[in-house]
Length: 271
Image: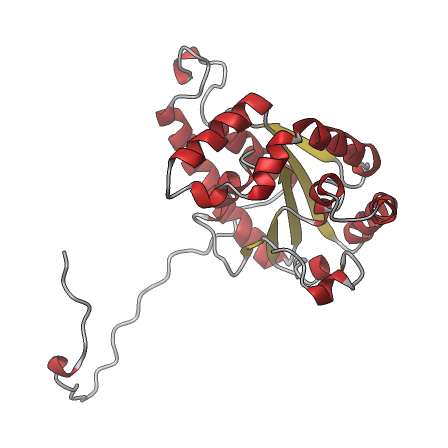
């Protein structure tokens, strides 16, 4: 890390990372993710990063910062909607499998197959047998992914009830953010203890040596983003494969008479 974490000048009186320090370190990490994507593409690596946690825990925030400077052709996000009627009849992992990375790709799962042991389990969207089968088969499925050459990283964003309530309240007060507050979010907030139990059970069965869980304390968004991004980079050895600057070609010179500009329809000049 470029800055000294122990330097008190980097923090506010309340212990939060100062915005200027956060923005500088975020810019550095985003540059490293650009370097990483070139390495992954050149080496043909397959990287899968799973982001799980409660609503408003900060999963989307860190995914947004990772993809802000990277290429969507190399670093892509998989955020699956609720399953269709056809998908409900498939093998549970089937609809997720088609989004797994090919060589030279990094895929970020904004929620994943762990919906079954968390949201579906608590909300009653799956049966007890389906839940038990998931806990039994998920570790084997992930071991197969790792054996196939996929680099699998799993992050759980942990947010307290009080902080989740503060974030939900903020969303509720802002019309442009209210779409983020769904009925499932409200139920999840009410059933906070049930979700805690579901998470603990999930970890008990799926925190395996080949694909361990990494918990990201996320009551403070800035530090959660920096810590998670730093950890991902530390888990994938890479070198700088960014190509050298290219020489821009001159325009080919040939005769061509373009049609009058007045024949085109332009966007109104509001500004």
